[in-house]
Image (cartoon, rainbow, N blue to C red; front, side, top):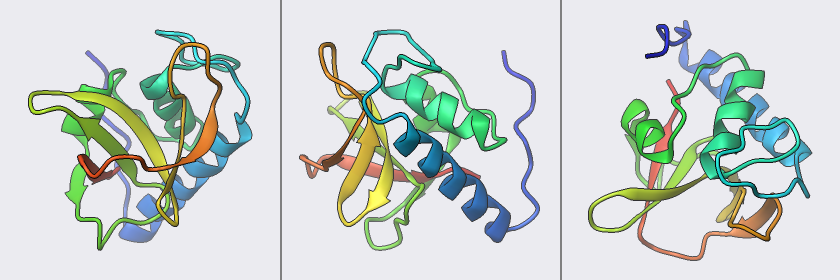
Length: 131
């Protein structure tokens, strides 16, 4: 089990961490998807989130489902760049990306693909804010 997460002193601190993580994720554009990879040159979806927030000074759980469980839910109206976007089936979260604004995310999509900025393709998503 991981140590306690970094506590942030204000919403502004949380926003700063999220925006830094967003910048880190975008800097990994073109890195190949590799299942189970957490960087610095290969990633799966949750590995990109883990790596990006780690570089921003925030500990995150390893899997998309655990990341979902660790964040505060946000509505699509209150989402902001740096929030996480979780794609889910009825029973579990199967994918995660970092919201970039304008309906797009940075993510490591699937085997054979590379980290990229892409429009959110599903309405079956939940937004979460790293605290």
